[in-house]
Length: 406
Image 1 (cartoon, one colour):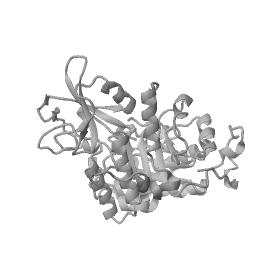
Image 2 (cartoon, helix red, strand yellow):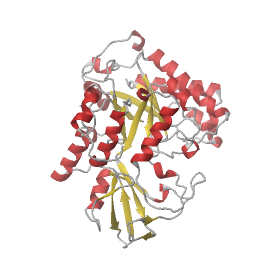
Image 3 (cartoon, helix red, strand yellow):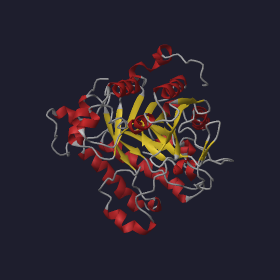
Image 4 (spheres, one colour):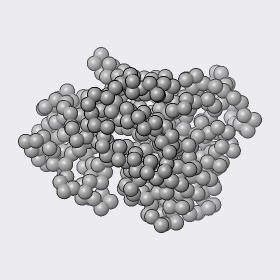
């Protein structure tokens, strides 16, 4: 669910795309209440020991804690704090994970990111694609669909309206097949045509249950004047991005604040006396600088690198997030920018303060290598600091801000 994905199917692969419609590909980058619906009678036999676990989750919390994941392995998902999650979103689900998650009262969303932009205006293709995705949701006993296209669309283009048509047609088919199903859409950190994604955000917000605002990869397009390493989710720019959506008259209850459980490892062309890391220039969608020159590292990888840091973890005041330097195996200086419990807390406080729909993460499987007591404590803190969907309104009182900019 990361930014800057390339669509799976291109202009020169239309026939291949159509033949693959019925396969869903991975992206590149409370208590449960059960209610039987007669419209679900054409499903395959329930694979769970308790057949009620194959029914959609029909009672959910008022707020969302939305986690993306990429791994069906039980040794990964058993480490999640299921008391915090309200929804888990993936490209593929095992039956075992479905039964387990539904037993915890957690909804499951199918992530779809394979619709080819070249086919957006093709009504016949759209109908077949929508039918195929709804069929997957029913067959896998899931609870909703999450759209994650992430491709450029120009203002005034026919594709801009056609994307609205696609999402609307998906919603209609989904709720007809599975009453109570949810539909969400992933959007860039700001509404100002970031990465040339000039979507009709107001139109999308009217159709879906909520927009998942990917408030990370903020340095995808950096206009300079200098190319330097910076925070993945700088607090003030994150806030500006959310305010941009609110300024479009999109209500706060339609916005989920998406946050990173990963960071960027940047090679430094030069590290100056103020600890500013100059990075190689790289053009991206017209901007002269981009985080593309860095490599994404999930949080457990970052903790390993931090053990060999040359200056230790310290706070970046501009981004309100941690960073550190290290030398790689060839002696080249690198700088790592990431988020941890201290920085994520500031972002949670903002989400609660603005009464957003919730918070979410790319992705909750980023803490697999956490075997030492110190790392286990870190993982515990990461999960414990997430606002509880059932007690959202008490979060600020329990975690008062301590002098940071909000």
